[in-house]
Image 1 (tube, rainbow, N blue to C red):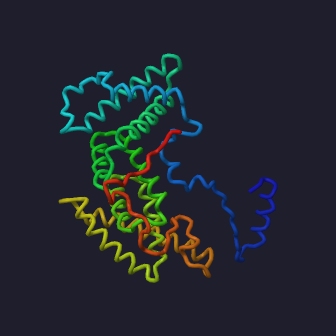
Image 2: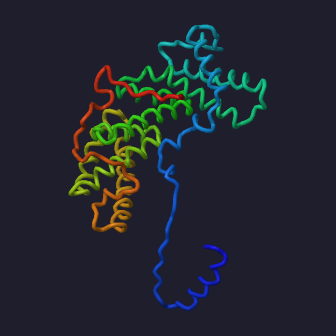
Image 3: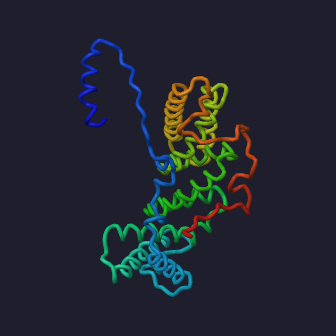
Length: 300
């Protein structure tokens, strides 16, 4: 509190020893703290660099047109190990653009990070996003980039799927959401997990019998896990997901009920996302047909 009122507060507390005090606290937080995409690398807004974008786009053009020789690429079987190809292109590209930019500017750690994030954003948009049509394509891409140790590109895949989920969340198929939750847990996609957890928590606390709904979701997750994680510890994967859902549901219900007991718990939930309440999607889920595609992220 303000310095001028500290003495007044101290005197009040001294007078109220052995009495009950009701303390009301108002906490103000920026709305941006609750925007999931703000927790991913910022390649737009104030940190955007037209010069870096131009250099990256030129590099990608030259790679596509065969004008640049990527070191060691001839030693890799492009068909059998395409993610090693992506890794070689990405590392060499970031290094080349960083050196080009540093010719006239003092190179710094911030500049290098901006080049890396911008390169990942553009490379994903122009190259990797073309590989995504079905749900399995998304899983394959995340898995390949994980084992190729390309975290910047993984973040772009996560941004991509998070944007699509946010766009369709009111009509999203709950089964699709559960599959994404298992994938996000398996590959540590924390932002995607946050978004999907919010959607499923709404489904749980909006149900007339939340405990039963959580049990039903658990059984569905166990069935889906067999498809995503063969011959691995399915119980640990599902257990971790369900534990997070239980804890988040408990916290949201407690906050909602204490805030407004007369309202349904999901209507005032600060963490959960809105749903249409119908339980069935009104638009096709992503990857349902060969023509279905995610909307691409644009730097413009």
